[in-house]
Image (cartoon, rainbow, N blue to C red; front, side, top):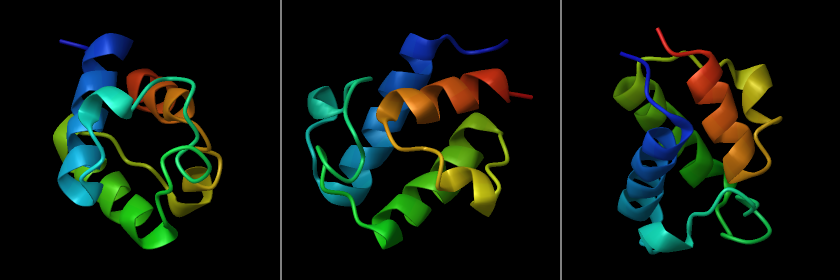
Amino acid sequence: MALSEQDVLAGLAELVNDETGIAADAVQMDKSFTDDLDIDSISMMTIVVNAEDKFGVKIPDEEVKNLITVADAVKYITANQG
């Protein structure tokens, strides 16, 4: 069963919280990973790998650079779920 954007957002917020300590409720669709949430590239790669495992998607390295906001990541994961 495919997850909704809300489910993906909640799961992604949990991953961000686990990796960075940022409160899950601070991870909102309109937030930029780097500008608003201050996530560095190393933490971002960890989050991406964990998201691939959690959601069963493959996020190619060349796609990661396009994931600027939380919404970008949520939409990508939602569209590419197995």
